[in-house]
Each structure stands twice: as structure tokens, then as C-alpha cells.
Image 1 (cartoon, rainbow, N blue to C red):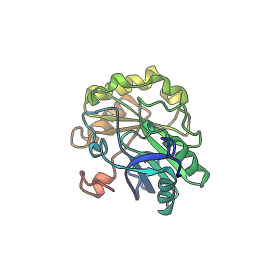
Image 2: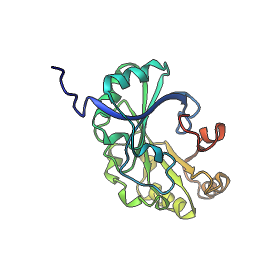
Image 3: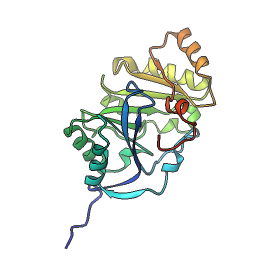
Length: 222
């Protein structure tokens, strides 16, 4: 009789594909994306709502094999919220063991304490404009180090000021030099964000969602 697979052995996957990394300090590099299904937040500006539901339940070994088969040295786990699925933690470790550079894109709400230390955590702290800023798990900062990245997505001046105050009051540059600031596509002009950052001499990397300039902004699977 075949053994039933546990939650540590399977994942619900929305898609797996190779493209280029569109954001982060790894922007522009060939990357394989493993997009999981499901998210416990509902950010007002979310651009991956298609991953909230559906997907295909796959054995973790099959997900690993498919991610490795693309041949890219860089692999990102994203969603949805990948850390909601227990098997993601073992998958990330297996990808690291296979010699891949592994990124995980996660909200500021999900617990990151059990992520393999070899993985680059890209933690998205939610500004007020997201509607989910009260969900940030500030204790996660204790598990952020120099290899990790803290990301802010901004829709307004209010969001910018919230980010500026969080960076200063929580001394984020002492945890990681990789502080990322980007705008909600079509809501806040990047040029305006640059002006504010320069005025405040804020130690952030202003970034664009590169994939939305290469392909149409609503294109999936790229």
C-alpha cells in the first residue's frame, strides 16, 4: 500500500517557470519562480490575486525536480504566501543543498524563524496603503541579517513617511543594508519616490518592477 503523503511532502503550486528576476538586489538575473497557492493577506494593491485559490497539489520531490530542471542558478519561492505551506521549508533546504541560490518572497506577517539560514529572505513590510500594516510581525526583524532584504511597496506620501519612520525608529540599516523601496505600479510615480528619498537622504534602494516594463503589466507567468 502506498504511503499517504503528508503536508511536509506536498505543496499546492500555482505555477513554476523560468524568467528573469524583476525585483530585489538580484534583479535582471535568470531565475526560476516557484509560485505557491494561497495567501492569508489581502493587500489592496496585490498583483497576484490569481494565486489566492486553485493550483495543483504536487509531491515536494516533483516540485524540486521541476525547479532544478530549468537550469537557472537562482530560484525564488513566492506566492501567494509560500511560508504558509510546511513543505516549503524542506524544499528550500533541498534547493540550497542542490547548489542553488534561493530567495523567498514573504510578507511581514509570516513567521520567518524556521527558514534555512542559507536562504535570502525578501520580507515585504506592509505600509498603510496595503490595508494590512497591522499584520506586520515585527518580531521577524530578529531573524533578518545582512544577506536578507526588507521591501516596502508604496502607494502614497503617507506610505513613504511610514517607511521612513520605520527605517529610523527600528534601526533597519543595522540589520541589513538591503532596504528596497518600490511604487505601486500606476499609483505613485517612481520619480516622486526618488525625490523624497533624496530629500531625506534615506538609505534605500529605489527599484522598479522590471518585468512590468518588459512585458505588459498584467502578464502572468513572466
